[in-house]
Amino acid sequence: MNLSWKTGIAALALLGLSACACIDPHEHHDAAGTVERFIDQQAQPEQLPPCLASRIAQIQDGTRFAAIRYRHWASHFKSTVYAEVPAGMTLQLHQEVRIEPGQCSHDELAVIVQNDALSTRKGAM
Image (cartoon, rainbow, N blue to C red; front, side):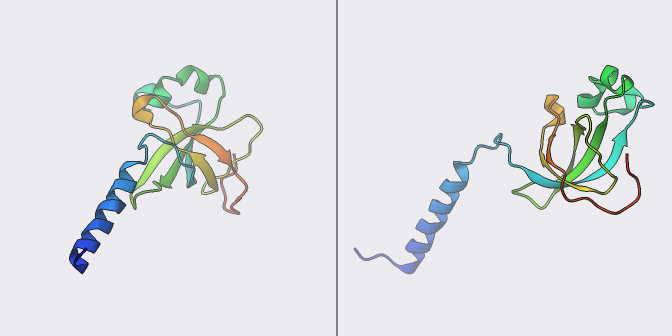
């Protein structure tokens, strides 16, 4: 078989692209994120993203939510997701956490899976 190096490179490129196509875009990967702010009981429903506005009763009852900024695993773009802070968990502003991102546009919240990397910055909540 007489293949040129260009044909070999093209074959490798196609193989690489087919490997990317096998990854489920809806599959959740955990990611490192940073706590940007907290959503408190004074939040106005009309100023909240849909995934939090639908939970305004929980917010008013004292359930804590956090806005977390993270970089998507397959991109250099950053996104903000919202997560319920589990009862008894102490988070601080600018603290790094591991999350499983959710899609707010589909009424999904992110899930905080680890909060070991505590920051020493101000803003404990």
